[in-house]
Length: 100
Length: 305
Image 1 (cartoon, rainbow over the protein chains, first blue to last red):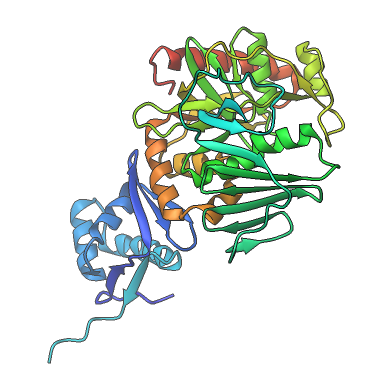
Image 2 (image 1 turned 180 degrees about the vertical axis):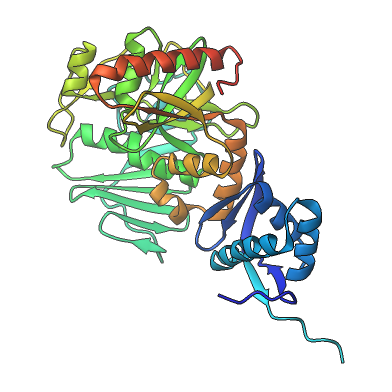
């Protein structure tokens, strides 16, 4: 598992299918066939990952949208991203190299 | 060749189904499926999977349920049968309307559902669950209480958009001896290979279908009182996928991505509930009463939540 730092870039992988169902976003891993349902905050995080985003910027958005401290949010979102990474749905890249 | 309508498809068959009425000779529409006998069925080239029972190739599926009996299903329209002297008509019929038809449906991009079904107030209600979950017993008990029996074991969703509609497969109702006796059904012949399971004759539905499916109930055991709860979100898709007949062959025959899109669209249009109940005869009636009231509510347009 990759350690998530504030500068880490979270990138969705292209190896899944996605469809809305009820209030959830349903994901299917194209190779394993595993199905995941994302509801509530998990769905909102997934939507925020539509474009590659740094962990810090993701937390900024979530802290603004939800009544939660940055510390609590950081721990919970970090756990969730680790689960998505284990499921093969995202890639967590170390900080993008700065332009010369 | 004899013409039949099976699971919503027009079939020309060299095999004579003793339990089905042939289509009248005036019907001239081209057959969707041809069932024929041959000496050797051969095997798919370059199968992506094979074992002693099956071989799966491109639009080509071989099913060998026994040493004297093989079926080869190709392009969703051709079923070739090679039978030795040891294979009975009953075996051929049971496999044709069971596993073979499951593989055929997968090739035709049709979704076969492992469920029994009855009608309530003009709409159809399915009961799904793995073998032994009580599908047949439940449908037979509801039929005893005046609901028309629509199908046992398998029905097939038709390909049309809109309200989900199913075509029943012509399979005979099979009940365990104790269930048949408790429900007061006269037992027919014993089912091959199942020592205490018997065919039970029931009147066939007056209409052929397709029938609009108002709701699907997933059967599960519960120690406490019977309960019905709506299934939502990802669970709805997972449970519907798990209720597909011969789902273990699905990914050998169809691309998983295509199945995901199709079944998600179906899940969106279908009300799914979990019906959990104790499996004791003493509390069976209590579960039936709850289910009947729920079906009546859904049939009249209620959400049944």
